[in-house]
Length: 515
Picture 1 (tube, rainbow, N blue to C red):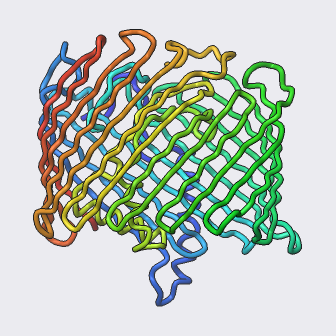
Picture 2: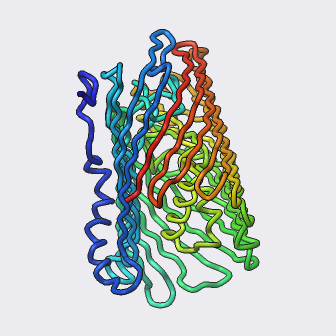
């Protein structure tokens, strides 16, 4: 039995060293916290899980020219950890192996990891934050797209990333606060050099210590983006900011400074920058943030609005900026169902860690995918300028769950000196849009059904760089016992493209166990 294609690199049975670095810090520190918990709630919780999925499909290769049916068996084992105390964080890891009855060359193993932590190393002085992820990403926006991560295709790769951020924070007398932090972000892909990059940033911020109507801050930031298949660019930014609390609900801010960068060429002469900002929070359930900024490459903006009702959450955001914190993947995805429900549960569960568990329990009862609005995008090897708009709404009642998530993005390369041939080199612009809808209904305390609809469109400069992906999926799930679940489902997928169109129909069943 083989689990990889001939000529492909060996599968990563464990998270990559980089992606596991932040998670390892949590695992190393958490046991000491568990010992300090005493009779209180456990500081460290561990929840293993496993599932097996059987899928029957009529187009396993996602290619109408070579249409073949197959039976695919997927075995997934995972573990979830949560830590409280001086080290607060979570780790959610899953390893999935798939075996094909006919197309054994398609056998593969995939990793999935989400981890984050915040540790207090020295009280009121030294802190450490970390995050890590492993996910499946699309290599090219113009290649084959799929609505299900179950089947491997040559336009998908495993992307691993981690971020480590140590910081020093404290007071200078009674008049100022200081915040010095260094962040290191690294991303790598399993099968494409386009996804390999490193991003580093050092920032120093001095701000007013006392809460008053008028505040101030001085900041300096130096950052570097380094693409393995492209080039390195450096940016420096220094500015001063004044803030004014006009009312208890309304805050205003303005800043001015100077920015130096070699991103647009070898001229590193500084350019003036400025920004205006607004923060409005009329109630604890409603907030609006808006900012307009002049950067060395042009104007940028960031707008976000969120309103929480008793059973629903509404979100909208619009932004235009260059990619720096996660430079190797241009994402155009919609707001995930998990994020909407996480905001919706804020009033009931103010503690973020407790809220995470409650959201996951709710999604498991409804048999809903927390990442239903899976981000789409493509790998890049040069800094890009992306305009993005996102809208999401979720309603969570006693029996019914409804979510709608939509987004669109417009990306273009801003680093014209880079010579690497990624999507933004093949097409001057890449436009993507996604619409995802979920309907869930609990038939009784243990059984539920849900309907999933998704539409995705990609547009490039030429007709062969355009595609449409549509999918519909219907699922039933039930629980037997406290820790076991069973689900059945069917899906239909249509991918319209001049190069590789296909249709796929499948039925599937999943048996899951939580230990």
